[in-house]
Image (cartoon, rainbow, N blue to C red; front, top):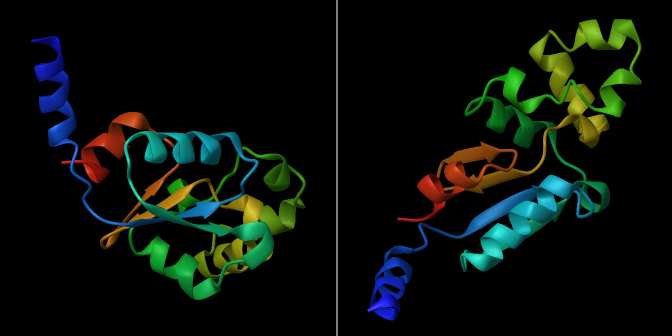
Length: 133
């Protein structure tokens, strides 16, 4: 009986789609996302900011799906290391895009692309509701 329940639970975990995850491999949140995706058998492709960079066009695309307040990491050491002038410039979306493309650590991690949407950061409930049926 116990096995039957587990089987039913597993059978409902149907993958929505292939996902692409953007981040830095040694980031704790990115590692948690990798573990969750693997555990739930969600196939993914990884884009490493440090090795591959990121285009302004990609960041602009993300900003169509999530606001700058969600995407821009204002809590990290990279943000704190910027001059006050640079931080103020980030209030302008074009300047923020330029800053994030030049300093990928300013982008919250990980970014998970699926279908026409993105998830920012790692949150188990959000991953479950968006990536599994």
